[in-house]
View 1 (spheres, one colour):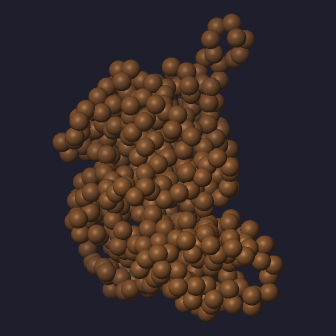
View 2: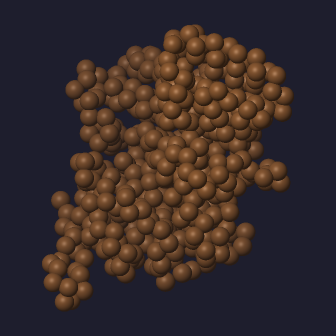
View 3: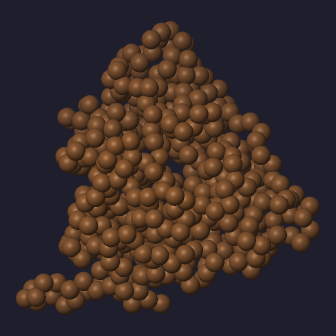
Length: 518
């Protein structure tokens, strides 16, 4: 992955649980449904507004992520009861919960907005999961808040289910991500281009701290607020920074590293986020906000799917550069904490920021080597990696299908890959170099091919399949959605009868456009 210079340098500038009671006569004692904590509410006063969700008139559970519920120590059966659904849609705030709308600012398509915040979302609280990790439970589409900026604060079924599908696919692919616990239909219609059925997404995240959170705190002119936020981020996400000689610089370096790893993983699976504003970049390094997102079909560094990204700012190939730009904005918020001398603070942050390309390559190079079955020196293998992508770009070859088919070539059958190229001659020339390098490794071809299949997914959220499932769900048929979720849960395992889920789009599909869902 070629990497240019950064496009933006740094500038100055204790709770009681909600208890679920089993029906009388079952002989089962009352047990907690949720045991929320509220460290954000207690420690970050000034970065939120207390609020309550709008009432959903006829809530109905559409999807429940039972494996995630188990991770969180929740009882899926209890979540499916009217009491559980009432919490998941926001009709009932559990005892101990402190529902709040978080405040943040952000650069949206390069333009700064000093006050964004959760315009249609609420943080219910935090759960400590089975592995001791603190996780946010957050509602999206739960009604207007003080940050709504004129919008209705609601969400439609389709976009909320899209976030469920794509976030679960990302999780199965091994990419850090927020996840959907549930999607609940509200029983009301929301006005978009047409009237659509409304829904609320219950989202789980390591936290919802964003670069935009720091931008908002820095803009308040309260050094103590900024320091409290930084300390909270260190304790929650990057505790090793606390013992560093310069803790806040160590925090910055940890976030830069986490984002470099995340972006490399995105690029390796052909993911296009679509709206990489600074308020959509997390401090934890998780992917957040699956609005106008999509996966590549044909490989194209200039691929843009978002209906509002008219200039291609967030095109597939631009994503690492934009990540670095966003991280420059993050550095600006931290400067007062880095050093009393502004020039020294800028110099320290710039040194970390300019390491981003090398950090990205340190994750992308071995990832692409694994996809091609290579195990040599990354710099020696880089021409093979870059040249294959250039061939795929020129001939608009299906990215996921081509990489997966390469393992068949290692096993002795190059036809599946050759068939994807309109003119296979350039591929044949590349493959001759590639197979020579594989032979020089002296490894068992079948072992190499098997390892490649563990790095190259067969099933991704193909855009046409996602749209088909969402259209059916919006019309009331959830079966295609549940089938798609089942397929995407095991993206690397070939299964008979699922051939259609590995195929590219039909010829009449596209040009594909996605929408934010607001």
